[in-house]
Length: 156
Ligand SMILES: [Zn+2]
Image (cartoon, rainbow, N blue to C red; front, top):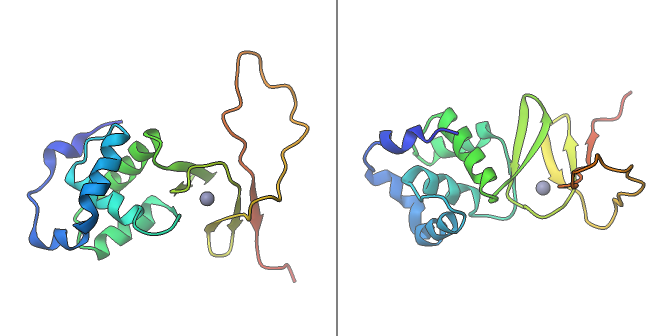
């Protein structure tokens, strides 16, 4: 993964900073995950982690960054999300090759995918039990089991 944006960051502008009340905490969170808290990473992390758990696509976060007057490209948002994911701050959930969501809740859990609204939501805990898994390939470990139940409007 490239880090091309580190050297091309523009100087901070006044209106970038209304978001950053939480910055020291967020910067520490990034450092703890082994990431240098660049201004862009910190700004995106602040949007991502400010509320309860959520599922965002790169496009969704890009729109939120725009609303918050953070000047950043979609490619940078995407790279940053992948870096957060590689560092264990987010979990990646692929619906298909064109739809990838980043989940701020990183513990094991399963999802509903609402096809009509393209929303990913957490399943209530305690329902899905994964049983009868076949023997796994020699020399491997299970890293995780994801269940995604896709739901849509009732077919008439
Ligand atoms: Zn989730």
